[in-house]
Length: 137
Image (cartoon, rainbow, N blue to C red):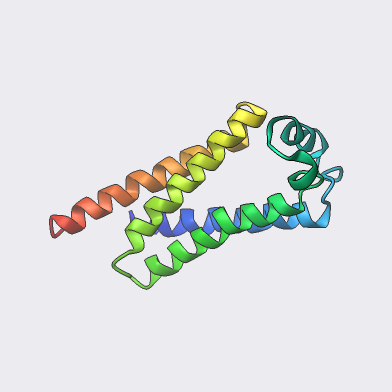
């Protein structure tokens, strides 16, 4: 299970970095097909003229919530830190909540569905590992 957790935390973190970079390279989303997504954000989220004029702030939020946290979880896993599993669990919850927000804004789509499953697998793995640790396995 630990190898799977390490892979998922790094995969999700790298994906978040790539997603944030896309948002900063082309904040309008035109180059990567995000223009309609920006309009949906502007229609459903509060203060669209402040927070959703473009994807720059969204990129920072993505990096902070799903990039840096997952990198921190991976680091703790590799260091075998006692809080690693709790960190992985917290990251999985953050990721799944992020995806629920995406579903609310854009509806179901393949990418979001896959990342939700990644978060669910992370959560289950963390709970199993915490249970095994408690039982001394």
